[in-house]
Image (cartoon, rainbow, N blue to C red; front, side):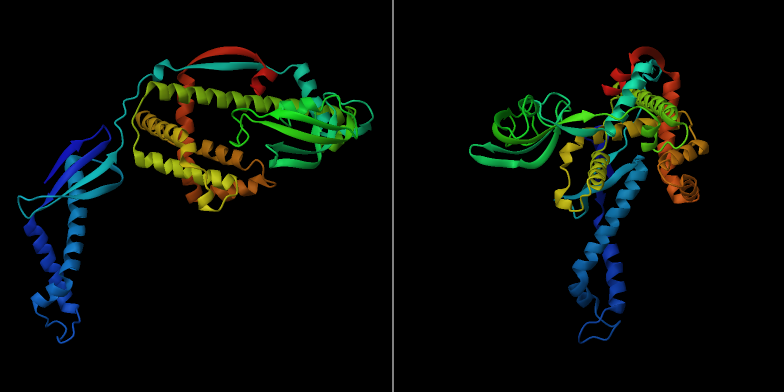
Length: 428
């Protein structure tokens, strides 16, 4: 017999009663079975009196019987009440003085009932980005900077120059953590150091010593330095002026272009810029669609799913940072909000897939794997290995199904075009 209490839409509590006679019957059967095999000093196997078997094995038999009956009664109650729980229940005994029946409560979570709304009101702002000659020239200029050289100068440093310095930073007479460097190259104006630090190095010359104060931002990642003023001493070892290579076939060769020269490099750069902007637009639109879906459908999520996603994100973060020590994993609170968003989105997309009867597109699965393998030296070989691995493909299919659901929402959304320059769009 089970009674249900709804703590929330997805949190349920069932009080389940197991009759005492059922418990005693189950205990008796276990003791009988144990008695046939038990070995107790002074008795022949199979000839041990029932009261002796009970004295030695009664507690063990009762615990095993209760465990089995709890499991079965909980499972039966779920079927009776038509609940599909998420995760394992929390089982607690309930004090019962009225009879010898065993009462316990099972707290568990179920998936939320989702009724999708707002799918026909999704609006997306699609950036319209034209890549101009100026944008291409700026990108070519960045390639030049990648191959730049430096010539020593006896003039005062200015923005764009490189200064090579020794320095140390002191706070209250003590050297700050990480506050000392030898032969450190700093290109002024590129944001390598804090603004106050770089500003202090404008107008210096080689072999000059300089002291200056740097105020650290209030939101600086180190609490010991956040908002503090630190005294720095620096020795300028050299001031170097930038020398850029010419935009010619020789430069193209340095970037691996053996045929077609600088025009081929320029064409490749343009194609890559176009590919990058298209990928950015696709991701931008995807995020807008997902945010629309989330804002229109507020649902409660099971704690167990939320916690599992937090742990998955912690493990992924550890993998990216090459951390193997569990004690050094990033704190759970770093992922709380994003994990909740992921779980909500996953549940909503699953409902769309179910309602729209979306089936996985095998061509899209292959395309997804192709994109994953694009960076390999022999991508076709790796692609075929993955496609021939049913277990791997089964892991990719749910991802592709979600992408198909988002694509469906995108195609049905109202689109508003917004014209924006390449530099503004890619740098914001």
